[in-house]
Length: 156
Length: 103
Image (cartoon, rainbow over all chains, first blue to last red; front, side, top):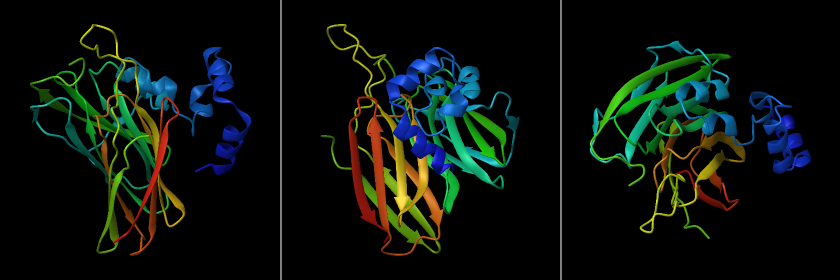
C-alpha cells in the first residue's frame, strides 16, 4: 500500500476540491481515488462501468477465484456472499451484483497477513449474476454465479 | 451516534478469523417512505481493520451491502491478545471505531 500517497491525499485535498477536479475530468479517478472512496466505480450504473472505475476493464475468467453464494435467496435484503481467492498475490477483491442499480457492493484491499478472503451480506433487487473480481499481481480475474431472488431487497 | 460494532476475532490454528457486525441503516437512496418521498442515501463508504497496529483490511463499500452489514476476514500472523481496531465512515461523515482482542 502506498502510504505516502494516502497521507498526502488526506492532508492536502479537501474532498470538495477533489470531487471538483474529478467532475472536471482533470484527474483520472483510478489514480487519485486509491485511498478515497472510489465514486466512479461505486456510482456506476452497470458492471462494465464499475469494472472500468476499478481499472479492470477486461478481467480474465479464473477458476481459482471461488464465489460462494446461495442458488436461491429467499430474502434479497440479506444475501450472504463469500469470496476466496486462491490466485497467488491477490491484493484486492471486489464484489458486484449485475442488476443492482449500483452494481459494485464492496472492495477490499488486503495487507499484512490478511488472507485473500472476504465475506459480506448483500442486497439484491432481483435475480442476477453476482460477480467477484480479484486483483493479483497487477492483473484482474473474475468469476460469477447466478442467484435467484424471490423477494427483492431494494425499493421495498 | 451509531451503535457499537460487534467484533469477534478468533484464532483457529495460525489463522485468525475476524467477524464484524456494524449497526447501520445502509439506505441506498432508492427507497421511498410511506409518503412517497425518497429516503436519502445513508451508507458506510469505507472501513478498515487494523490488527496489532497494522492495517490488514482496507475496504470500500457501496449501497448494495445489506443493512447492519456483516463482514468476515481471515488473517495469518495474529497472536492471542492482539488488538483489533475496526473503523468505518459513512457518506454523511459519521464514523465509529471499536476494538476487540484476538482470542
